[in-house]
Image 1 (cartoon, one colour):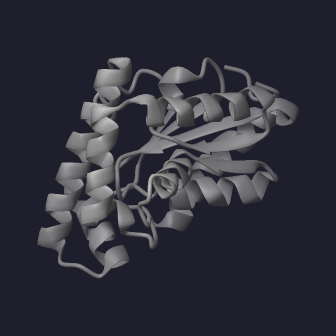
Image 2 (cartoon, rainbow, N blue to C red; image 1 turned 90 degrees about the horizontal axis):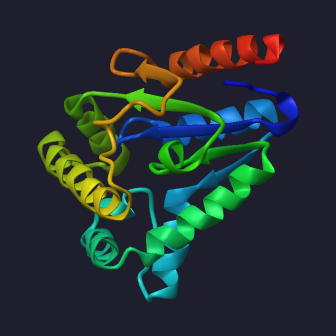
Image 3 (tube, rainbow, N blue to C red; image 1 turned 60 degrees about the horizontal axis):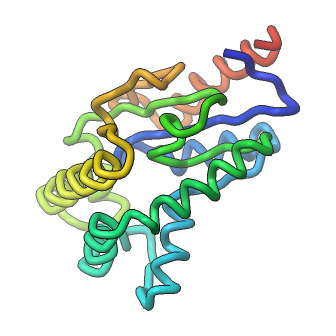
Length: 195
């Protein structure tokens, strides 16, 4: 696996509440890379279909789940987003916040942010201002729906098959800053060696 500054592609992946979006944005800023999010692109698609995907917790709302069910039924929305992300990846100098790119893009440095369901639920509860019990149900449902979509479209289950990943970081007992420091230490080392 080669990591060269002029063509760097970093894929950050994790389940809901793992911290992938926050970490991906910070890595992009640190290395002067463009940031692209599969979730943001899907929100734009939802807007075109008449949904109102506002706020951090929209995916966990009734409307967010309705859009997800539509995605399960019709894979073209996800495929369009994935093609767009692949185009960005081929140009290089990007950080991709995506649940699919580690499997679909042949290249890049792929990072999995691991976290237990309980820790992810606590993070979602704090982020969305809901109870941990409610967040546990939401996290469980989002995990199931994501796997329905990606298994149907591509034949893999997010969070079960970790073979595409070069780095797996257990975030349960680490702060966001600590997770960032671990990842950046690995990236810096690889960039120094030109790997």
